[in-house]
Each structure stands twice: as C-alpha cells, then as structure tokens.
Length: 388
Image (cartoon, rainbow, N blue to C red; front, side, top):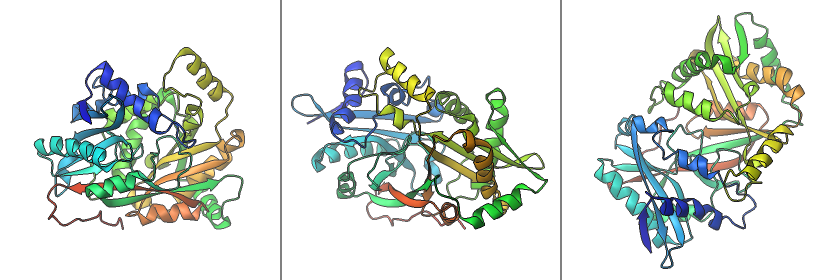
C-alpha cells in the first residue's frame, strides 16, 4: 500500500474514482458529481479556506489502484470551542480492510496533531452539519441529497481504530399521502390566524435580505448550544448561490413576528434521484441534458428538510406547525409529484426537534453516527449536552 497526497491531476482522478469502484454494484448509492467534490478543495470557490485549512490523501495498492481515501481539515473558528481542540476528517472511503483504514486515519491524526489539534470528528464536511455529516449506521436505503451513505462495515473500521460515537443523528420520513395528525393542524391553524405572524418564502431578487434573516434566526435558535458559533454570512451566501440549480424558492420559508424573523424552514429536492442517472460523475453535454430533462419534467418525488430553526423565545409558540400549514396550503397543491418529506438531522441531544418530527406523524428511518477520536487515550470521553 502507498499513501499519496492529492495535489495533482493524477491523484485527484484516483481520489474521485474510488467511490465508483466501491459502490459499483450498490443500487442505493448515488455518486456525487466530481465537480461538486472538487469545489470543496478549491479555495477560490470555497470560503471555508478564509478560516480553515485542509489536506487529503488517496491510498493505492501495489498496482496503483485506489483502495482508500480521506481528507483532514480544521475550521479555525470552531476548533477551539471544544475542551480538546478538534479537527475533522471527511470524504472517507475504504475497502473492507482495517490495516488500510488505519493508514488513512493515522495520516489524518498526525497532520491534525502537528497543527495543534487534540481530537478528530467525522465523517464530516467543511460546512455546516446539514450536508454530508455522519456515518450511516441504520437505514441502508437510497439516501437523500446531502445525506451520507456508506457500507455497514465502515462502523467496524472506525471503532477498531478507537473512534467512539459522539452523538447520533436521526432522520424521519413523512408520507405526504397520509394526513397529518389532527392535533397538529389545529395548532397550526390557530397560530396562523394570529395577526402578528406573517410568512414569506425566499425570493432570488431579495437574497441579501433573506441571508440576513437566516442568520438572525440561526443565532437566535442556537446561540445557547455549547459549541455555538455565529453563522458566516459569506459561506451562507455562497451556499445559496451554488445551490441555484437545486433550490426551489417555495421550499424555503421564513416566519415573522411584527416583521422580525423568528423561524426558518429549508428543504431541497432530492437531487440524488437525478444523480442516479449520471454514472460517471461527469457533467458532459449528454449528462447535462439528462439532468435538465429530469428537473424540467418534475420527476422528483422526495424533498429533504435540511434545516429548521426557531428563535428560542418562540420555540413553544406552535410556529413550527404554522410553517407546515403554509406549505400544505400554498405550495404542495401545485407540487403533487412530491410524495415524501425527509426530516433529517435530529440530534440525540435535541429532544425538541425529535418531538416536533414525531408530532407530524413521521417515522424514524435512518441513524447516522458522528464519531470522535481523542488523541490522548486517557482523556475522559464526553458527549454533547442535552439542549433543554
């Protein structure tokens, strides 16, 4: 085996080739576009590098064939909010071989340690945790866009190295062909009729306003979380602009009280349903035509709620139900191709969001683990505090 730092065309090719090899016969897997992966590592296109650094490797066998890959990165704005300065690993893929996995984990650990880091979390990406965070532990089915997928044996590879589960993330599925519980709609109607509340969906010609509204809600909803960091408006703006092909403005809603933003709700169509038709991960002309045809014909049937936030003082107001009410009455009647909502990323430390998802009648289908490895093996392993 040979570990190669990814820094030229040949190593990038092998880095991106590996998922196509590992998942060749797995019908559940939708391989991301190569261009989308590479944008993560391009400082000109990823604002993460304004406050972070990253490195990646590909592992090859004696014949030069890729058998593993990993990236290590540090968000300098977040790393030191933990008791042990913490970095991340991501983009992990590997054959079912503990020795190969250990070579990859060692490379990441040694690089992070040299940067003054004392722990590593993963799998993760370079942005917020609503996209491509976690190790799939339960619910091996076609994943929604932005939801990680991996073989079951990855858990063994992580645990054999010494990683432990830092927290669990649950995903719920809501069948839109079934009625919501009656009590849910009664609360929603009652809140919706209150004159101080108003609701608007996102508009592209007001992107600056909605970026500001998003940040205000984000700060008001999560500022008491133990590892809270104010949202980077530049990163959010770039994420929205880069998601223009995916983002349906009617799937991004804001709630206001006396014109002040108090809640937000963001969904994305399951772009993986389209990506399954792109077998090589390349956006050549024919693949672009296939993607545009899929989108134009509205063949999406599932949408994923990637984030829902409510300013703390309104978290028991029923405003969450009222946003669903707006969707039901103003959006879904003309989007009848959608039959399923995926409500994702309910952390085991966040009983409020779990209770909300259950209140809609949604059923839990998937569990992802966020893993942590402490470099000092004698340090006590502590999990996140429960959000009250």
